[in-house]
Image (tube, rainbow, N blue to C red):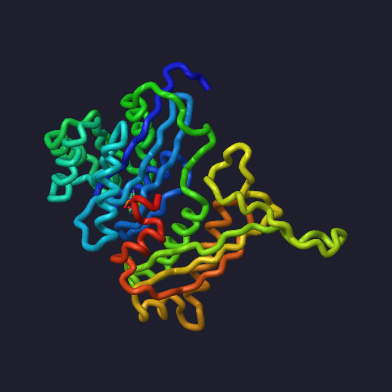
Length: 336
Ligand code: GDP
Ligand code: MG
């Protein structure tokens, strides 16, 4: 990799819930890290992903959408989004293609003005509108804020997404690589696994149990597959409890994707209401099995090794307003 003119920096992705922030980030780094869903506010925590190539290294911070807080989780999510803006070298503001700028947009624009950071406007989902309309919408935003550039894209259909990388590299300063070339995220396997389970649960449950669920991984351990008979009765060794670290294939770390390894994962789906517990478990446990199977496949796919997933359901009333539980589940600033 040429170190000449190597550029690097932190890029915060902001925008209202559901505009496609996670989809774009996943697309740009080429891996599925942040979960996406048709329901807003699926991304609860700040997710950091790393993209490295010849031109430089981009560290993306995917933030929860800025919105009006309704409870403590909401407040925390706002805090994370706003705090992110203060820490980055460049901001990507994602909007949907429309000539409407509402309260949400004005709120974000005023926050951006205070940060005095360079901002790229990404108008996502242009596949959903008439092509001829796009310049008009771009013009409306041009008047709202002095953007470095305005980029119409479709993250879902991969339209013009390379232009986002080009623009980012034009805006970033020269700098070092902060992470190993092969680092993709600083989220732990545990966090990503919990997010996958939550995504599958939200998908399977459809609208029945809205956002009152969280997922906690209570145990994640690896063991060797049963040895062949010739090996006698040897107890299965622990392959690597220490592998509970960063994902990506950082050198020197134990690999997750050892084909002789089985990962035993226990996870609890936490819900606010007794009535929801029944729905999540389903008739004869059918719903929980469905969530578990889908999540297991997705986690196996991600880590490249066999997974044995056990799911439990617990009711914890008002967990979204409980500071202690939020911290325990990784949603508080100090907890990270
Ligand atoms: P976030 O809340 O901003 O992170 O939004 P997500 O990335 O979770 O996306 C929300 C929804 O919008 C998902 O259903 C995506 O598939 C969809 N979406 C994202 N990008 C596009 C796009 O370019 N075109 C269309 N039609 N849908 C998109
Ligand atoms: Mg998201």
